[in-house]
Image (cartoon, rainbow, N blue to C red; front, side, top):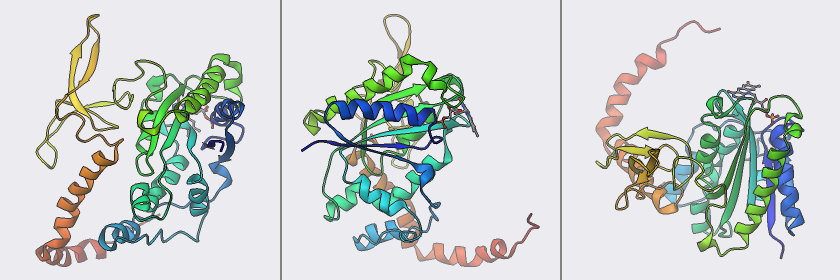
Length: 316
Ligand SMILES: Cc1cc2nc3c(=O)[nH]c(=O)nc-3n(C[C@H](O)[C@H](O)[C@H](O)COP(=O)(O)O)c2cc1C
């Protein structure tokens, strides 16, 4: 059976992101994949209300209670289509240094579709999902400093395993990317990389993108932060802002700084793995769970909340 690859663009209709995603899909199709494409602008996606109905169902009752917005917009229809696919090419524009809000809105509604949970209870067929990410923006990385990284952060909930990334720089106008054959060629290569990855056993799938891309040798993000003590006492000197791996900066033989992940504990919090994300569930149990377990907290909230509930300021 042919592999199924889906392209999802959050950019303008016929815009730079869409063109690059379509070029990558073309390569997949040439290599035998069955491809589909959607642009998020064609769908109605509402904001996550933050009600936690879905996660309370998952973690308290072990049930797939779904999203309270399920019948109110197109998210559920799109998710059912998504779960049919083996690989995904996501494209999005940079707005204010990061991925556009429509991409984030779509992604944050995926909490109700946490694949590790849905697979565990048999609601969906377990699948290893492969992904390529394409970001387009008018500037260099300097003004697109968080775009791929914010797209990466949206990949964890549904376990999309990122094997390639492309940052299309200095493409601003409609059709601008068509004047940059090297970007079109690189997008085509992404399609080939996706197919190369799909041809492998899921256990052997890994990074197929440019060698040495990004600061982080684990997830290839370009975003590092100074570590701070975490809820369980663990502290790294430097952390990858995306995958959470920890280690330190060292100079290589050419005097260039590189991020070296601590071999013993550095991969413990790796958010690109189900096990790494599982530790975050422990953290939620220790913070939100502990809050609910202690009745004294309810009394404090009941006593102090009225002040803020009743505090009204002039609106617009
Ligand atoms: C609201 C807004 C904010 C933007 N902010 C940035 C930015 O911070 N950095 C950048 O490189 N480009 C920025 N751009 C330019 C777009 O990323 C660029 O036009 C891109 O090619 C659009 O992709 P699309 O054609 O797929 O929609 C911004 C555009 C808009 C409309």
